Length: 59
Image (cartoon, rainbow, N blue to C red):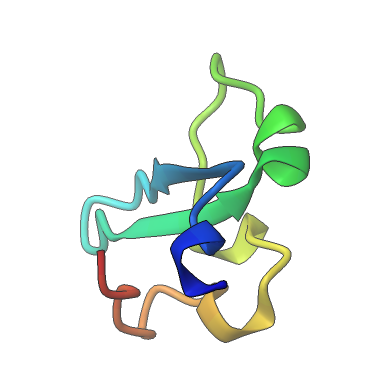
């Protein structure tokens, strides 16, 4: 059901100072994020949200 949509999802923020949008990653993808390194939209495996020009998903 829809209520399970956000289970095992993690919000990450693009560190491009002109963007700073939040992106929703699967737990699998977020596990690969190196938290010592900046994260950017282009690193998102979801092609619908992998560009700084694309609007944020609704929370």
